[in-house]
Length: 310
Length: 310
Image 1 (tube, rainbow over the protein chains, first blue to last red):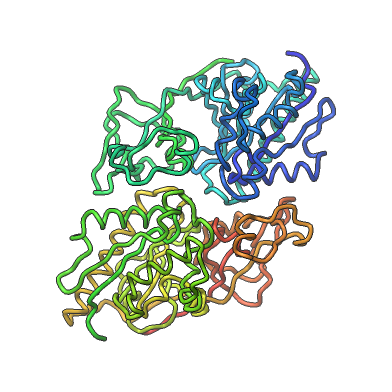
Image 2: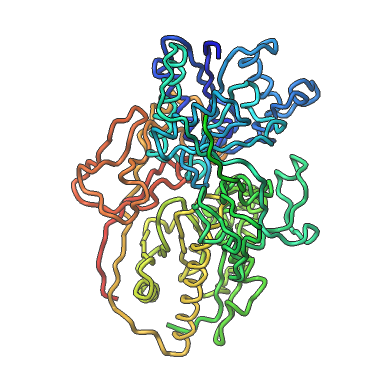
């Protein structure tokens, strides 16, 4: 691993996720908090217009706009497509890597504590995850290898990852999560600093991680019977979805990273009927009841738990 | 008290408060759930377009559009002004009361349990509040007498009141709160039925209520130094506000209806400094950290606790 020379911290990739927005504003005001002796750190706001409007996005999800195809297509002219190109110009001028690490700050209405989301099993990231989760039990590591072609901002960089904190409502600041996220960022930066100095913190070589299996949608009515097609679906050309017929089951709500066994209740219909998990094996749901995922047809992600020596 | 002949239940007055939206859809599908032998009940969706878009409102807050002045002004043509007039035509055709009670269903990111909000100390409503809070300790009663001129939907009717449930994020359904709200509505309707039969449930004549004192804004920077003016502020002509400089203090977060004593921490600045409550007497904050109130300049309501014989 060569030296880390430049790190980018991005907040407000989604405009209604205030933790990252206000952390980045703080870092822009006090850059010494995030610079270290051996590298410099850039603090950047993502979706400026959406932040101003208190929305996730204006026309389409910015954090799906960073595909090679999209970035190279001069026809795409939505606000988010333009903003994605502008962010790429900052982080990859002339298509050359300018930053070695991207830390993309998100928040969720699901009870995910402090989750690190990696796109792959990069050994450097896994060791970082092992270190951070050893010093803070709130830290979890989720690996989503399916996410490479989705156009996430973090894909601009080999060492790009997300910090996803929750549970917190959209357009709300939670003081405790704000401070925990801030401390986690400092721990990340201090780790990089020690790596650069050849003095990698050795705490544990053991890492519990959660690997993406798939997503589960809410039970829905026939799409053709749907009275409302959300504006976002129309804009993004998302598939027509029926109306939801059930809610996350109260026994599953806020239980991210807890085992879900075959036969456990998963949904509760509006009529009060339980819908059980019918899979063959125990899974670990996350992103349970994330507000922004209703329109994406996702009630939760399922993951498998795995122990790793890193 | 004369007979109750017609009750209206409104959901989705704010389009991103899903509990009320889906309860009303359920009641529209199964009207027998809300009709009673001695009266009929109307289930009505409020801000149709905002529900479709998953927003609180499209152009302005519908639940501020029910002033006499606004309803009688043919110049007002925003979606919400038009929708307010349409709802008035349903609930007050020819300006005559058509319904005897309006139950307006809301949800909040504050931890308000099941709160009944009344505009005044109407003895019938106070007795209803005493009954409901005696059978369910989650039920709280908040009296906001300042609210009469604010153009709330509930002001269309002498016996109009709000059921405000939380904590739940915007655009999220919480199964437990959904079921608790549903049961509360049935208890309200059953109470009316027994009143009509001259058989008013006698459980207690004692009521704990919380009375509006005022609101507290977040500490903010000078408005003139503000870089962003929210779109909503521009649209609604809300006063220019500076950027917030502090968050709800972690020790106050989710502690709605708990006493706040002089000297208790109230806010936490982004730099980590506590800001204390400097009032002279103990108060009871509610609507703590409601997402929709950031743009209204409200970090919380303050109330005083009062015991009443009804």
